Length: 423
Ligand code: EPZ
Image (tube, rainbow, N blue to C red; front, top):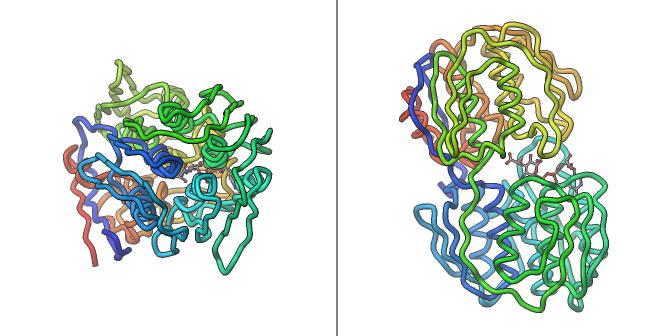
C-alpha cells in the first residue's frame, strides 16, 4: 500500500465480539530502532516488527540512504555498510516522524544529513526545537533549506549535558542515539520514560553503546568510536494493547489480549477499574469483559507512566457508553480532539473547550460516513462503528494502517462485520 490511496473502512455495527487477539510489536519502538542502524555498518535482525505503514516508510527511507535488506512476516534483516545518499526525500517520509529520527543518527555517523521537515499526525504542534537545540549543542550546524533540515558536523559530535525543558519521546531518542557516537560523556536529563525509550536503550547497549540510567529520567552515555550490528525483538505495542482492551469494554464483548505487558498499560487498567470494566490480568494475557453498567471518570493525559495521550481518543469513544458526565484533559498535544467532531455526527454528546472534553453518556451511536483525521482518532472511530447501529463508513482509513497491524482482520476474527476497500 505504498501510495496513499483513498481507503475506506465499512462496519456493520453491534456484533458481539469475543475471542483472542495478539499484540504486535510496538510501532514507536521499531521506528527509532530502525533508524539506529545508521549508527553502525553491521548487520541487524529485528523480530516482531509490526507491518504498518509508518514502519514501511522508515524502511524505504533507510533503503533510500543505502540500506540493504528484506522485510517480511514481521522480520527485518538490514544493514547499511555505506551511506550512499544523505537525502531523505519528502515523498518517503511526509506522513511520519521517521525523518526527524534519522537526523540524529545520520549526522552522528556521517557528519551530514538532509531530511525533509517531519510529518506525522496533525494532532497539534509537532515541535522539534529540543532535537535541533541538542544536536547544535553537540556541534551540528543545522539550517533550513526549502522545507528540508540540513545538519552538518565538521568533526565528531561532542558530548553535552542537556536538560529537556519538557518530556519528549523522540527528542530523548534522537539525542540518545547521537550521543552514542559523540566524543565524551553525554548526560541527558528529564528524559521521557516511555517503554519504547527503554527498549531503544537496550538495543543500543546490545550494539556496544555504554549507557546507564535505562528507564530513568537521566541517561548517561559514554560515546564510542563504533557500534556493532545485533539482533533485537521489538517490545509489544502498548497502544495497540490498550485499544483492544477498550474494545473489550464495549457492548457485550469479551476479549483476551495476548502478548500483553500489563505494566505498560497500568494507567489504563486503573481507569477501567474505576469505570467498572471486568479486567483479569494473568502473566502476558489480559481478559476484558464488558459490563453494562459503567461509571463516569475524569482523566488527564500525561507522560508515562501516567495516562497516555495515544489512548485518549479511544477512551473518549468508550466514555460515550458510560452513564454520566466524564471529563478528559489533553495535556500533551493542542489539537487532539478532532475525533470528537466525528463521534458527534454518530450521536455522541461531547463538548470540547480548549484542552478539555466533557462527554455526556450514555448515548446510542448510529452508523454514519465519517473521516479519520489522525492515527489514534481512526481507532476511536472504528470503535464507534463497532457499537453503532447500522453501517459506518470511515474515509481516509490510511491513517489506521499507519499504526495498527491488520486491524480489520483482527476484528473480523473477533466477530466484527468490518472490511476495508481501496478506491
Ligand atoms: C511520540 O511523539 C510518539 N510518536 C507519539 O505517538 C506520542 O503521542 C508522543 O510521543 C507523546 O507520547 C513516536 O514515538 C514516533 P513528544 P513525539 O516529542 O516524540 C512538545 C502515535 O500515535 N515538544 O513526546 O513527536 C510537543 O510539541 C504518535 O503513535 C516540544 O515542544 O512527541 C508535544 O506537545 C502520535 N519540542 C510534547 O512535547 C520538541 O522538540 C510531546 O511531544 C519536542 C516535543
